[in-house]
Image (tube, rainbow, N blue to C red; front, top):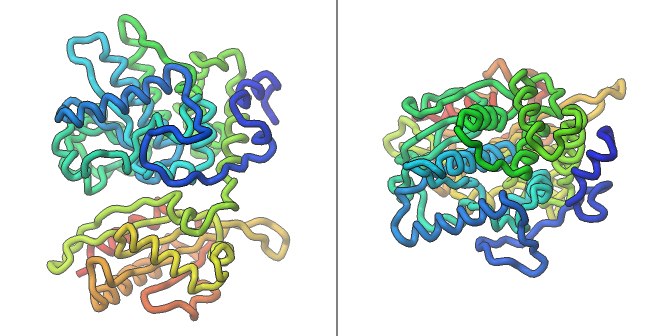
Length: 454
């Protein structure tokens, strides 16, 4: 442990016995209600109480047809720690900064993932546990707990705020975009949103927390900022910036972390020690995935939406991306029969369940070269279905269009067919490459190909 022993005790005080040396979280059964289960713990502290109360009040107001009073703060559908923390932070700020005004705001963070998917990110579970939130995520509002279809609800709510998310999912397209905070590419959504901030930082939580602090410090009287939320903010920035040491770390990541630290329970500890310790613990938890099934690995970091096409027969198709930190061979070994066909059977069952036409799995892993040096390998798995919105002829055409777009793109260097590509079925392809082209680069290539497909 690189941090001081005092800090270590602070960080680990709420971690169960045995979790320090080996963070091995067990999968929880699927549940979509906030009713406690045997063994569940109730959250303690202001942050947990506020989050649970906001969820209850939102559902009460929905029942009373008062949805128009609410702002939904949404992260992206992958539900990582950065996205979740940014949404919770801004929802807390909106409500508390206006509580004593003539126009108080009702705001709630909406996590755009099902409840059971939250535990597929062990680092989220650890960070929430350390922030003294209720177990089973009962304090949080997730997509499967929405009492109304998003397409309908989007027209009723006061508006939405996007964090770590450049544009709303298609299901929220009718909602008014009030604010956007993102550290990715500006896609032009919500031109009238205020604030509307796109900035390259390691963590989107940095942008949200900085804006929160700037506004908080201008108030005549500051509202209460619970230390649990402050520590959650530091956790999100730490894991996205490798403890403020990653090359993508900016001055704002460092400065905002320092401002947050000075308000936290760790204010007497050096920033480097705090961020090192958080990064070490959360990074260990994040890698604890060996117990997960293939289906859970596909679900845990999934992003997808409808994409427009020029085709009059099929004006939109459903496109989704999974990011998996295991090789194709390692994933196959996780299946019941440990065979290629079983990987595609499990993948097909999952994509059929969520109604996807075209899916892409982006795998990454490390191996050693002939000199014993580690090198990163990435894989792209492309699959097109013919049983959702498109028929077999259309599926063949779409597969060909996307396959050619991937193969001719010069930014994906050293692209070559996977070693067992000759065993693949029609409309299935797997490539490997050694470039740094992850989802942020590959997704636009494929989206542009789909949008040009006719």
